[in-house]
Length: 615
Ligand code: FAD
Image (tube, rainbow, N blue to C red; front, side, top):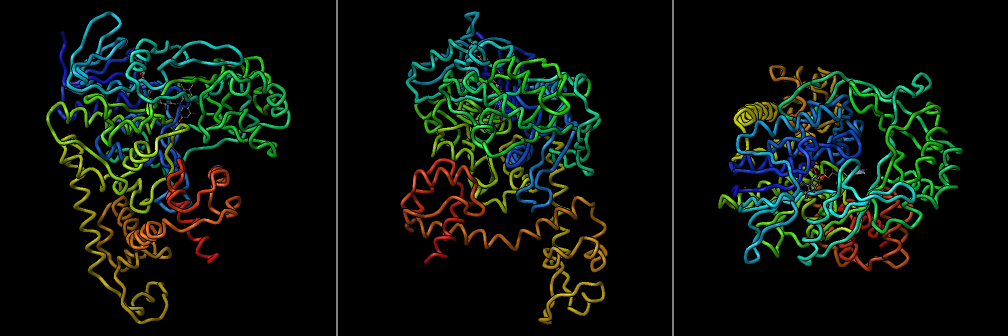
């Protein structure tokens, strides 16, 4: 019988990250997945990162995880979302070549010396006196371990839907995990059904690109990993087109044939990734929706039409897709479909993602009710670190809301649970001015080094960078300038006569790093990325106090009553979805509002501000 310290079941985004983290901790780890060539597969859109999600990728990278490294090896178009807003809410995103991403994940895992990849189906967990002791595979062989991480994604009792047709499956081309689902059901854990969907895939050679707008990547790409500076493969542009009245009419008149709307699916879907059916029902006043045509790879003609996921029958998919400009003669390579699957109530887990009722069993990824590769990977990393810690007799690893988005997500999941697929947003974090994508390494790499999960190359690179940042900041702190000195380089400030440090000046939007170099010529000796990081750190240093005050005042006023006729609809800054939810539930006070799933610290601050205005 084979024996490992840790077994990870599933080679998706959670499983790959869990296995890599466990192996980096020094635990002998087995990654068991249905198909070796299914490891690192992106089930839906060929993209990594985005708002909130990009923060998670950076945090994984700061812990020496693998998602950012693989994404950089596969990225064919980088775009920094919210570029015009402050760095705290900017989200690095890249479109990824599917094959390159999968190959990169597999290469990284194969290179982990403590990791063994096993192809097989886990059909049961082995237990002894309430403790997990290993797994049984479909060929009846057993593998034993001190800790097991379960990351089977959308595969538990997965059922795929296209129109009225249903077919068991974990995703297209993969069978579901039924035997394991049956055994897990016997454990008596609270569970539910969720659903998600994907658009049809198009043959790019049949798209009329000449009539379409194109969207290039950023001129100055922002990569994911702190170890990388530049894109690693050729960069491409995407196409943009739009749905129109005809598209909407086709969808509307076939709504009863959609799996989502025809009553064939009981699970709840991701509100923030609506299907085309959802869009047409929920946003009935809109006559057009944007569709991004995203090539799936450098040597692949498949195109992913982002924005039109569906579960309508294939002939309706063909009709509505061909009503769109540029797609009049398009060939569908694979029909869009919806999938419903089992998830477990994450409130059964502790902060290390270990099942409270069954020591040694950790759950991570879509199985915990989340959606998205990044959310899955971040949980996988945490579960992998903790499974290894448990197996090796080390202290458990916990993140907090104040140190990371990972901490925010785990706290949200384990205390509030989910009623719909959970995805990350910057608005979920009360400490978002400090939890930035740009400083994830400064926040988390020291912790990772203490845990012993950072490889030598990254450790050295991090220490060198930190030393330079400290020196650059000290240089700016130690030099002050009077208003007349500032006027000489063209900086005119209010005339209070006070001297200002270069650090304080750096925080002013009108003062560029170039101006600082005129004042402090030695600052030019630092590399542009160190100058930039120092500038961002200076900018946010001044807001930290305000952030703490806002958090404290929401806490102080938890009992503040919210009038029963409070007008949530149209409250500037409050999302339509959250406004609708609050209008329906009508919490009596801020504390009750805070407990509503999907409620964000930003929204609470907003409501409090309006309550104060009305007093
Ligand atoms: P997965 O990526 O599903 O990986 C599960 C792994 O477990 C697979 O490798 C599988 O082979 C393995 N496995 C399963 N059962 C067993 C077993 N018994 N033994 C051994 N191995 C097993 N996310 C979004 O953010 N937006 C979307 O719009 C979106 N749409 C989606 C549409 C579809 C149709 C699907 C299928 C997924 C969609 N997702 C979407 C979700 C996204 O794919 C997941 O969030 C992400 O893949 C979850 O990662 P994971 O590691 O938890 O699970």
